Amino acid sequence: MADKKDQTEKPASKVDNTPKVTGVGGIFFYSDNPKETQKWYAENLGIETNNWGSSSFDSRDVDNPDIVNSLQWKAFKKGDEYFSPSKKEFMINYQVQNIEGLVKKLEQNGVTILDSIEAFDYGKFVHILDKEGNKIELWEPI
Image 1 (cartoon, rainbow, N blue to C red):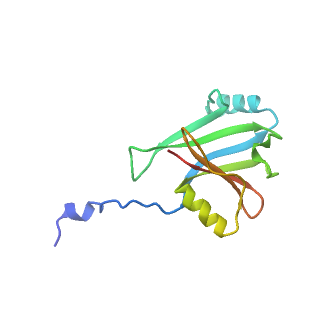
Image 2: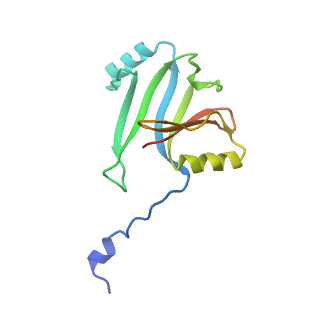
Image 3: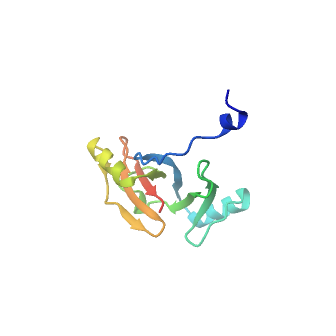
């Protein structure tokens, strides 16, 4: 019979590089007046925004506590072209792993890829459309 310590230890983690969504990276929506919307959220819900008009909600990765995840929140001016070609009032950013592999998988599945993967200091991005025409932003942190 194994002792109690052996029963509670987790097996060594394997590196999972499966192309997939790993979380929500951002929630973006249209507003008639983003500055007033930001002010309302700050005064009533304590959501302070930075110089770019967004707020960052940080959390730790359960399996890798040294990794900090960040969920972005931002109100965009109604009619801003960033959500185009979608006509919806919102856009969700999903955090992913293996963005290149995911884009290949999506292409094989006939998903509309709107642009090429772009890399910045804070991650890689690409935009797709779901089957109802909602623009989705995929983000792989660096």
